Image 1 (cartoon, rainbow, N blue to C red):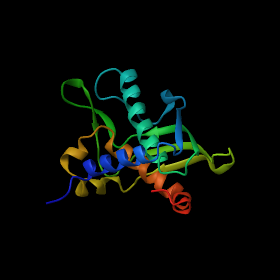
Image 2: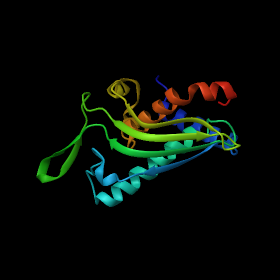
Image 3: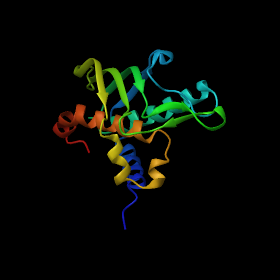
Image 4: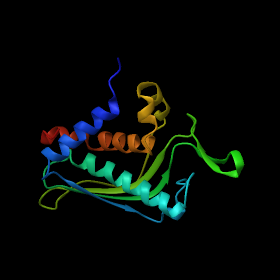
Length: 175
């Protein structure tokens, strides 16, 4: 029987957040979302969709920041975002997000990580991160995980975080 990876991820995340109450925090700025490549809603108003998307993804950035050394501050400015898939007009003229392996999620951002004293530890502008391998997640996760809103985008942010901050996390001995 395959373990429910999403439930395990959520449990570990909750434990990390609780254990690292003093850990780094994250501030995310979603700069000019009207100019993003693709954050189109396939249900309800675009404004409500963006609020929901940004709230969920802010949570992912915060969860990941809990892994950073105590007292640090991560500031991320997202300058472009492209969700997995593309919007197409579907049945009855309603828009639907169609996800295919060639339509991977991507984001462009600026970030700055400072330590507890305010010293810049890591910084980069106009970083483009894409998860071209996102479609392989489908074979390793349960159906319920795939139905979580913004699953592919959340996984992309977690991958970006791990690839960008792994040395800092390992050096500090943080989880």
